[in-house]
Length: 82
Image (cartoon, rainbow, N blue to C red):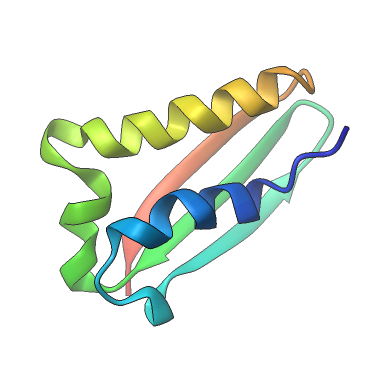
């Protein structure tokens, strides 16, 4: 069962941002054991996506980790702005 991590992250982050047209999720690398993703948002939305003390970002990572663990992989998600 394959999981589309880009769509998963996109679906989780879209309701949080004011500028959804600037939202971009890019997959940098994927191998047998790990996946690296980068979430790019508008500068105004970066704080909304990361949250106070990183709570929202950590919640997004936890959901992605749970999906990846079923496949025996690890996920690394970086949040950044344009």
